[in-house]
Image 1 (cartoon, rainbow, N blue to C red):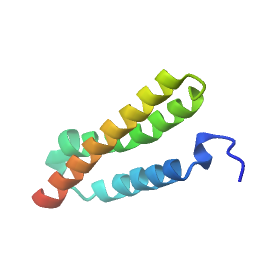
Image 2 (cartoon, rainbow, N blue to C red; image 1 turned 90 degrees about the horizontal axis):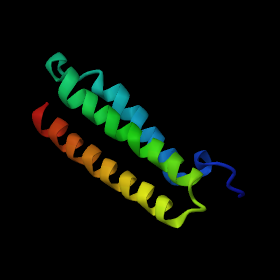
Image 3 (spheres, rainbow, N blue to C red; image 1 turned 120 degrees about the horizontal axis):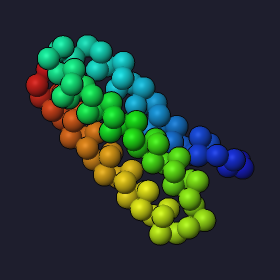
Length: 90
């Protein structure tokens, strides 16, 4: 399979699917979490996808590519922590 864009990457597809699931599930969070946990978990999960797209666009430049993948890892960890809070608080 030829990769034509970041959207063809399995990791991108999984990250996008998770971000969309988080969006739907977070609609059921308590309203008082709208600007704290809800906003944060949505932003960090979407950021994984956006940084993957940037990494793909900069893949010719190793340092920039690695930097964007490092950002993906950080945003993914942030999303994971937010999911822990959501699980334990609700």
